[in-house]
Length: 307
Length: 307
Image (cartoon, rainbow over all chains, first blue to last red; front, side):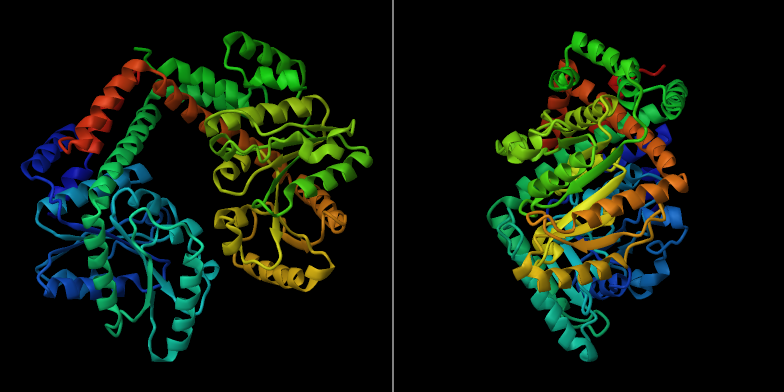
């Protein structure tokens, strides 16, 4: 699996051909569940994913854990890249853990994550947990890949305090208030009440699914049943009303549009002649002689084929 | 002014040439203040802008009011497009009010707003108020155009309740809690306390400017001095430390990059041959035979000139 994924992440033509051939060997596993799990650092994502992953593996599922963390490249801190983080789960024969997806740019990360999902499904993993860091960018991409969005929160802090972007709250299908251990129970219940109230302000989901808020503790293995039952319930509802298949189709189209833009812009970024003309434009703009809009217009027209 | 702006908004080659010639006649007015004013519907933006605009005109300033509202195209509701909204201000000889910038796409709106700013400055307006609706998209663009971000809020509702995106709170240089009339004063003061607290959580601004929170009532003409003094203070600090000129340079470059992407993607969207190939790709993806990533890659490579 690891080798196959490295192949996908390569930019060499030969590797790209091989990775295409590889994925063509398998047909997509349409019955897999793609679950995005997000939450700020400190929300206990690793502990939660390990506990949930263990539970599911023990029930006979094959669980793949993928991680997206665009910031880890910049900060040098491999906060999601550390496999030993989920030591117990990584030793489970039914689990596959992939550290933070490589790539310097978000587009590369998106591509690698998407190919990883397809490959894991092809290899028989029926549950894909996709971990993100809750800063906005990665969730924008993951919403085109995951069926279900699980948001981990903490008791005792409003979402301002937790640095969760408002848009992410809107994506959530399930809010799990983690670390609701004995000493924290009153706060956790109060947080549950507040989140339920806040969720009332959002529009109803197209999926007809009603967002759930529950409390529990991954550390003490409480509340995980609530989450898993919620997930199963979500798939039951969205399969019955045909939402899921339509949703995945829409996701594929959205990904296509996203990757198309990425490719076009990236092709230009790696074009030396384009870059040198662009540098000239930038100079003119900085000196104050040139208008950014006109420069952009003139430059763009040189590069797009008209037929 | 109105005619000149229409020229800018035109897509005809001839008009574009004329508008370029027109803007070349003037040199940019580097001493103008570009102030973005945002807030959700109901925060009293119109009343506030009219009151502030009147005040500034009476002090001898020339004030231009521009509006950005991408949603007005969709909903058909010209919530910002109604000139009669600011009837008093629009009769002031020192004021110029431009209704919501035309354009079906955000890129077009951005272009028109930017050209309007340049034109207004060239025509001697020293204060440009740019009104947005606080939904996120338009603020992303305006942050590349405005020097100062003023956020209007209401007392008695958390920002969740007001539907302000968290990212906008982070942009704010000044939070003005409007409608702080007598019956609402206690609530307004409590809101001020909360916002001040919340702002502590954000990183310090690069400009060295410390975000201010004040209360007042545009309706009763209270608190506007606090806002205007704040704005002047901001310009004093950021001129003294050279932040402003560097910031405007960075903005121009960011706008250039933004417009460049817009142009390239738009050129492709209007290319029939590209569109027909794209439609074919979409079909393949929907039928499940094609992978969005590979389709995007193949399609992009047909259109970019290599030299």
